[in-house]
Length: 609
Image (cartoon, rainbow, N blue to C red; front, side, top):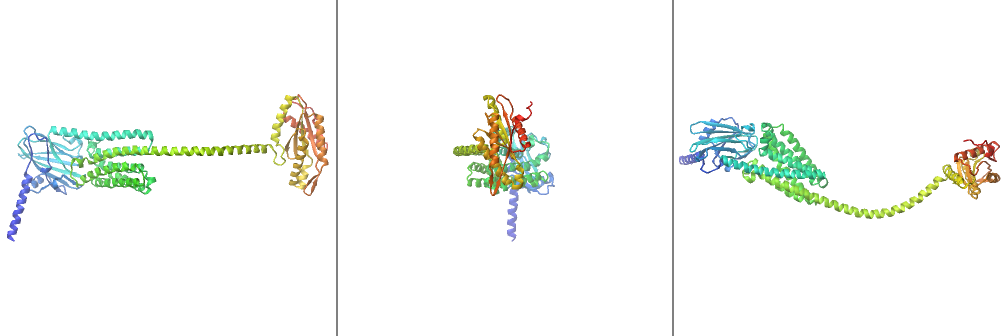
């Protein structure tokens, strides 16, 4: 046992000395070396309470309490507390004494550095997005610090990082020339990315303004919202939009992620026509939209350390859901979903790498750090192609529908034309019958009062043109009211029909026109008839009616008529109203003289204008 304890103690001492030796090995800058990645030279210590100061941590580093980076990674996921990093640096390049320390992650809340020189003096600097942007050594999206490193002088670097965001601390030293080249390349890449987004935005803006298709609007919404997400993630929003507002900088990431997810889900619902193709999927998409809207509002109120991990973690299932609904739409025969699915698969891969780096699962490499930009750029380009394909498919489908509709319409028009021609013929016949019915009295079948007046007007015009005379007879059935009262209205109606028939037979041979004037009164016009002829015809009518009994059922009814006669001499101008009035006045004389007689208007006072 003593022997075992001594072996264990010796091994432990050897391990501690190896760790101390490793920790003490400086990061050496050699001549002509433009850039030095500090990750292989860093040791780290996590302080959950975040209360200790730099002096304490310098002592702990000297005592070997700092640990090597896990697998050489500088990303630790979402963890609270303060992270301390320590290294020794020695500049052996006499031509370059000024170096820029850059933390290549823009979202750390606060990063502080202490540079302890050989004589014990300490230089202190602070940066991060909880300080105004102007605190940075140079105006750049990543926190940075100028370090003066004298050639051959070893220095100790202690870095403290505290953040509610993902804990990522990729530290590197750059010469001024190397940093200028890095910034140029980075800005070019970012400019290229946003140039693609702007081109797609304005291209689809024109299409939306032209076509008024809501799909293009939501595509632009998606582009804009996701562009804002990356603007925040890359530190550009803090640099250009709100450099003096750490509060906005803290909340822009979760809020922009929620807005982007709302645009993504709504665009997917509209593009894939989920309301018609999969209503259940459409309702789930709406529920996700509501969820992200609530999370976005909560991001303005809750601490950043709570909402940011939730928003970041929700991106993966949100995009995965879009892939699922794309597969469902594709399986249900919606061809544009093929390109849509490919686009979102690329975006899912890029987003997954971003999320896995944020949670410390994947190392921070170029392909993982910029995976979301690469994936989203390819996704948006493919989505633009998918929109064009969808529009083309819809146009072809519309053309097919219109063509079939036109063919069907032509067949229908031919059929309808034949049917309409037949219907028009039937309608013409019906109209003719209707006109005839309108011209006739319903009970007696003679002309109606209105039509008789129109006919009389024509006869008066013909009379004036031909120079002939015209006789107007007003005929009334005597004591007709007593017939209705004593024998009933049905008998009265039969009497009216019998009288009308007798009058039509008697006047027809004279080319007379007969109409029912109202009640038991009839009116007749006899063209080219003198007063003597008209009196003879009227008296013959009166005698024939009086001498002929009417047999109606079991009843034998004797009828008499009174006739008023007015003859318009040839060459005389008069109107229909005046002619009828004179005949009616003559009828009044016949009634006054005892009825069952004929009287003419010559016994009346002369007409006055």
